[in-house]
Length: 150
Image (tube, rainbow, N blue to C red; front, side, top):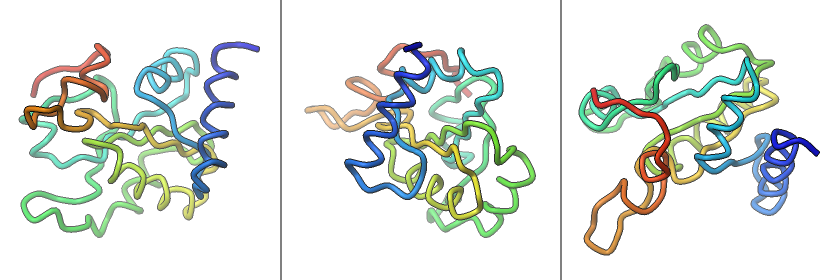
């Protein structure tokens, strides 16, 4: 079984274990491997514009706010922006700060007919460490994956 097939199988197992309504969940490293191995895989960063500017971004990610700053109000145009910018037939990987908003975005995507929607677990910054800081123990940044500072 190829690395891509193994990753997708683990993602499906997580879907079943967590009773997710979308295709599955992947770790940041798995998401990056899918992006490298599947030419049409798309990473959708659903964090706010403030997070993109001040925390950093993943190169080549499609950026669509799920909630807007300040106030973290839902983006009323999210569904329209997603369907206009991303092909429903592609593997679509949703990324946020910790994996919560991206879970919500993947749920919306599945309801819109995206059959290969995946949540990126732990998101860009991951969970807080013992000192209350993110980006050190898990998530995209802590995994040493490519990103740039706004």
